[in-house]
Image (cartoon, rainbow, N blue to C red; front, side):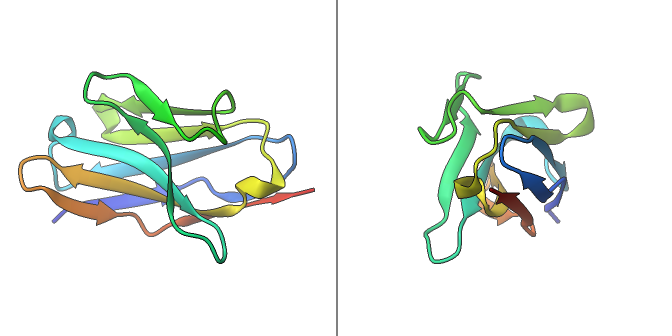
Length: 117
């Protein structure tokens, strides 16, 4: 059973930083594509950061230069380092996984990030 457990959200002032973590279990880490999405109130869920098939990274234009996605293969965990946070970054952040061998998608429980002005 594939599970994603997120942690690290919270309340921070504008300009501050947070780091989100997402631990994968029940699937082979190297065979699973993982990324971060977010959903603000009244808005569609959007892709924030992802690894490409070539091992590089992609970011939404709104977070480029401020957010960094990374992974620790030994811990089956991905991270999202968020710096210079803005009030418009306020959203529920979701970890997403696509198991490449089955083409099934999985979502974490979501973690709230609130940035005060």
